[in-house]
Length: 203
Image (tube, rainbow, N blue to C red; front, side, top):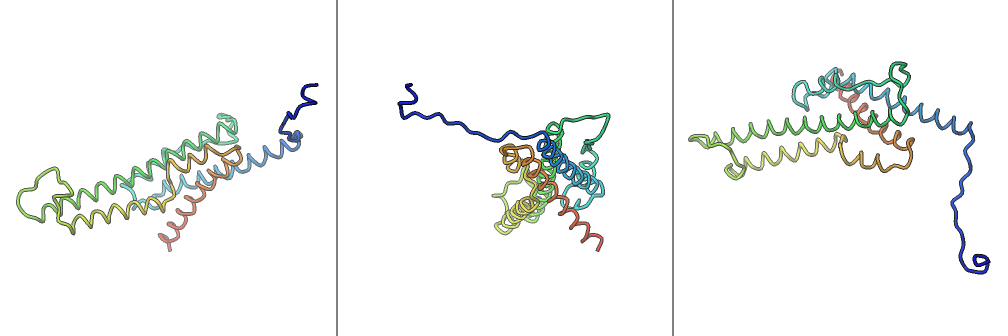
């Protein structure tokens, strides 16, 4: 009686119960999207092994990366995976790819930067004092090195392979299907970039 006579209301979120057929359709859609993701993943692995775009990284980086990428098979009898478990394994592998590419770019920049600093310091004449600091260089040389760093940062941004921000979004998505779609776009983007590299290289 207290509830009936008061201004209090009970609220509930109601959603229709999904039928077995609808659930099966959803599972098939997820499996199809995951299969497409894995196909792109394998294509990227092969392209890395072929060394496409390797000039932007230290020698051997992409070949070693391609060889290191595992290739889980959705239909493998020897290695049965739950769909969600398989997805997160692929996501983890892809994040490792992103980290490796970023580290490769940073290593290349560091080598080029050090080489330029040694050249600039040597051009001043006299004995070379180590370590070399930016403030010890001429203004024009500092500007050249700063421009190198900015260009490297721009190149990393254009690569669209951030190992942190994209994965924060991925974790925050509400459903497995949305997560597969998001990761799928990331992998497809890299596949298309490598295809463009191949078209220029073999034109």
